[in-house]
Image (cartoon, rainbow, N blue to C red; front, side, top):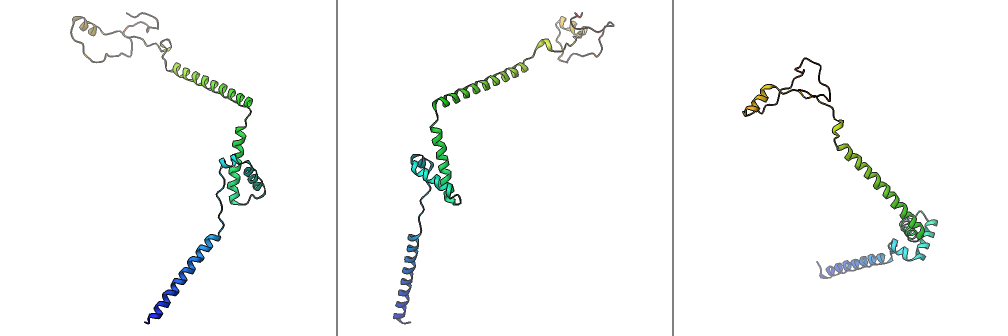
Length: 173
């Protein structure tokens, strides 16, 4: 190959690359730069901007960016309104809150006391169980000093006496 052609080819490449780079830079510089939407705090500090955004929101509701601006503006208006509360109204709200809190506390205290009352066992309301007589063999062994067995005492389904069954409040032999 000829040295002149090699040189021309690389010069064309360099020029084409330079033009391409310039075109990219020019298009980037010409694109509109949109500032970020103002924050709620910014709008609370700048009432003029807040009013302007609210007017735009009423006129142009279709734009997406206006949606973010409008939402921030509405939040700023709500916060500003909350800051400008009448002290008498705020005092009344606080008193209502305290009264409701006290009622809730009393209701919870009553519920706790009812739960505690349910847990307590009233000995007078328990059912009466008749006491059965102890067999003579066990009482004699205990009196002699002999060791007693750990076996559970036998229970009888019918009373041993031939008389009527014992009733509550009577003494058994």
